[in-house]
Image 1 (cartoon, rainbow, N blue to C red):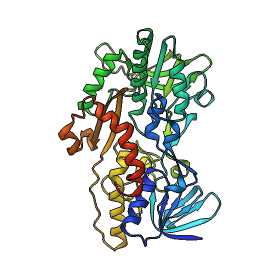
Image 2: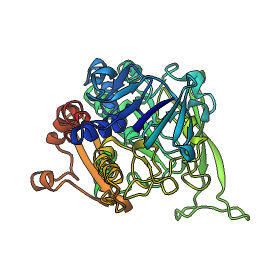
Image 3: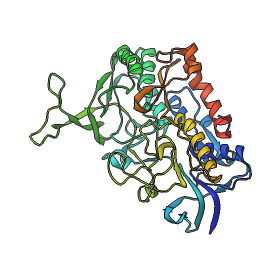
Image 4: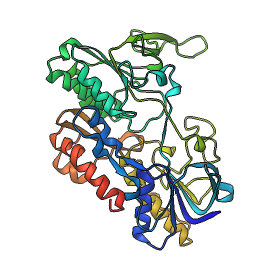
Length: 417
């Protein structure tokens, strides 16, 4: 059996950042990272790859180059968690024990949750920047005669909730530049009831939607994709002429099935916690967060197993799942781990739900939506002194395309930001 002081499940954004910060503060710590992948991807740039303005190759690094000096890399999958025994089992069958556990394995894309999606993904004009942004760009380029471009998202939680909109705005701008927007029908079908949860940013996005003439259809839940016929099937919650939900005698909303033909379909596929997480004792067993890891929303400590912390996409926190959230979560986890190691009981409770969604609205324009728990705007005070981040800005586009990738590779993953 392998034994380590601190075991981190996941060598993605959250896992590497926590490991780097821990070892930067105390290089004598025994830190192990469980991660099977040879490659590490900067996925926030995949929106730009799908719009032809960023090279896919520049989003990739060798995982080995990012493992912090002093950390042990366990190149395997976590298979079973035994938090009551302070251990876990790898896919190879080997057991690993720990004093402290950090759970950050990321999120699982599950195409099987929409009928027909797995069979038609990356075919028949059906693509996703979450899966293959190169295919998306090929379809944007081949959209030469106009038609219907359909964008949608699932009812599940997803990483980077704004991503389904970003590529829609970029494709709309692409069609505008090619003088094809007037011959195109851009549709956004969403299960939600608002375009964005923070009103200051929603106001700007409504203007963007009007500029491009996007047909937004709320309360549409994607259930099936027929790639051969190029039809997406939705369950639609019915409303009366005043906008009120029409209810059945049982009190449930009345649902009708709607078919939407498309020439190109971009979707955010359904996403869940990884299977080994869902079957563990660390997750919520019912309610809205079923299957996601329990974590105190301010300390990120597990309520049942105090030597366990969760952050990143897998944590059941009432905020958006983004890399920006990890940047604020990681220092809290690191501080609390060090406090426990010193025998302290008072936890750092300074994480207030910060997350950020860089909403690209055109080639050369971006809205930087920053917010915390309760969908309260939480903009960076330094940036806000110089830029109104609720408006479309060229400077924020430059931040998205150049500043954020630099910070990710050179600062965040090195424990410096």
